[in-house]
Image: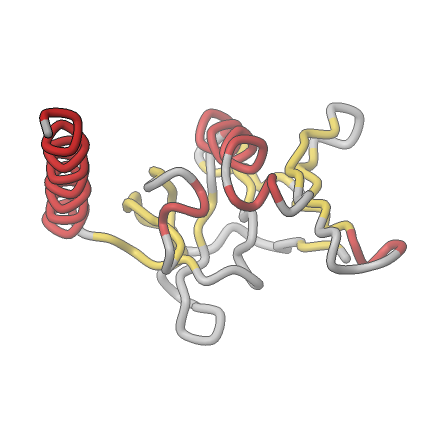
Length: 147
């Protein structure tokens, strides 16, 4: 499968994450397409550093545990997603670069993943809830050790 964009879409900088942000290690900065969506989900374009962060999350997180990979093909300047749930060529999706103000960007998962835009307030609330959950888990562990 190949994902291509013929013209540079109308993009705005935003924070994105999957509907389950922990699958990609949290949130990413992206340029998000304003003039279209995929089944109601955002279509983000990632600069190289965000794409590399996404690639690392594949290796370190739940997606990597299932065998999924996201790698950069330097020869074609494309990010390549491998999905072990498919066979042959269907297992690979290639994301071609688009130039946005002279910067290469890739719409990784833009027409197939459930990306959503997250406000700074939502990101802060989720971070606070995660921190609170970690504190409660630590308190519980310490409480058990003290007994």
